[in-house]
Amino acid sequence: MINTSSGAQPKYVIPESAAPASTSSADNANFKGHQLQATQSSRRVEAALQGKCALCLETFTNTEIKPLSLLPCFHVYHSECYAQALNQSCPDCRALASPSKIKIYQNSTLLRENLPLECTEDLCLVVGANASICSGTQALCPYPLATFPYQEAENFLENNHPQIIEWLLESFAQKHYTTANVRYYEKYCGTEFEHIHHKPAITLSVQHNPNEPMRGLYYSSADINKAKTAESAFTNLVEDIRTDLLILSLRNSHPAIFDSNTDLFIYRYDLWTYNAIFINGKNNSVPLRTIFNPSTKSFSWDRLKLELEKQGFEYKKLFETTPSERFFERNEFSRMRSFQSRGFDSVDGFHSNSLRGTGDAEFSSAGSQRPVSERALEIPSGYFDTNSFLF
Image (cartoon, rainbow, N blue to C red; front, side, top):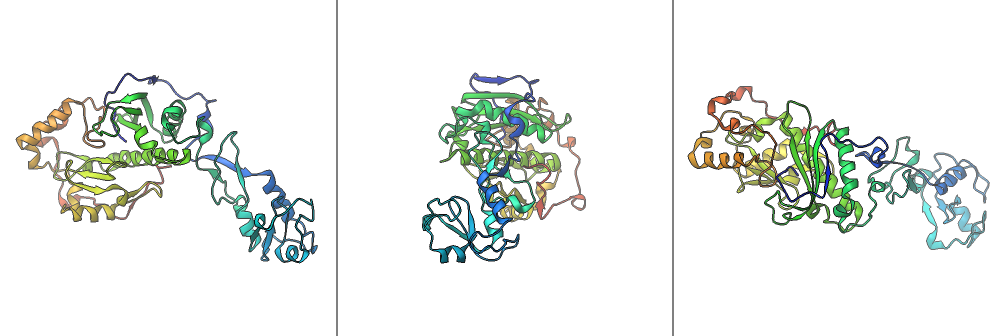
């Protein structure tokens, strides 16, 4: 989430100039995951498939279409041959083979796809699901948990915050972000969300290029620790980061949709508590996960249009930069000036610190914006391409 309001005295601080050491544990723990490799047992099966069935002496082929039986000792036979042999032990090594432990696959392709994999990183407890060593592609472990010494969901952020910070720095660097002001707070006070207030959190500021303002991000234990396993806690963190990266990219490519001077703008967003993108204020929202799926990394302009229309909003106004008369009403103007004096930018959380340092320049006058004709508006549809900036 985006927010860097001041909190309690941080326990853990990385100076702005600090960068991960080249030998850090984050070097091989990035958004793409650890590489996987076949286990020793899997390599034994692959070697067996290059030879013959020890019972019928027929050669296995790479496209074997006969059902195959994989025994617990990882010796493999044609299922028909093994059934006829009536063995309770492996014909090769004599290891006991309980019928309930024997796995039968309809062909060699399915067998290969289900061979166990292991992570190349020491102590990593997670392997990729349904990854295939024989597919010709590099299989990857989705969760770099080897980076995190505590493998429990409870207090995942609190127990692993030094490693999470190191991993965040490395990961944002891969996405070409400059990172600064990285802190861990035992009691974070920079948000109006009651469930997050006074909870442990990590905050950092990011900037994609020098012409943009620094944007504050925060990751709270109240969100990350909503999990039963360490894997799902890490997934929560990943989905939170994906949402932030999406909003940061939308701010760069479509700044008008966040322009609070206009008739229609994104006021803030929240992935966890409300699952909402708030429009113009706290009283109007559209469901965030309906528009953006952090798991599949899919953002739909058409779904956003549909959800706005359900709320009675005119979709094209989201892309207009003509100042709204409503903005210059006394009460609204006073409210926005009050927020700006606190250094807030109305995006995420109830208000988000954008670290602009621009004072009241954005709210000076209607003439500071250039009206855009409807004919000149570029109103997107379809899906927003996230492949270039999401992981």
